[in-house]
Length: 151
Image (cartoon, rainbow, N blue to C red; front, top):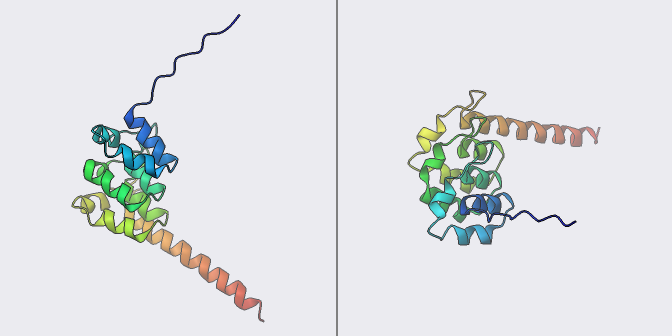
C-alpha cells in the first residue's frame, strides 16, 4: 500500500526571508527585500522571538541588508528575543563589523535600544565592554605565552 505524501505548504515570505538570512543566502534575501511583502517579512519572529534584523546582525549580513531591514521595519531595533536581546545587544556581544554597530547606533531609535536591558539586566554597552575585556585577556595570555617561550 502506498502512502499519500502530505502536501507541503509553500513558505510564507516572512519565513522565507528569515530562512534566507539564517542560511546566509544574501542574494535571495536582497531580492525578497525588494518585494511588496518585504515589510511583513521583516516583522516575522521565530520560536525564540528572534526577528530578521537580529538574525542578520548575528550572521554578520552585508551592511545593505541590515540597512534595508531597518528602513522597512525600524521597530525591529527595539524588539527583544526570549533572552531580552535586541539587535544592538547581538551587535555588541559577538564582535561583528564595526560598520554594522555604527549603523545601529546612528539610527534614531538607537538611544532607546541602547537602554533596553536583557534577561541578565545587561544593556548592549555592557556586552561590548565584556567582549572587549575577553579579547584583551586572550591577547594578553597569548603574548604572555609567547614571551615565556623566550625565557
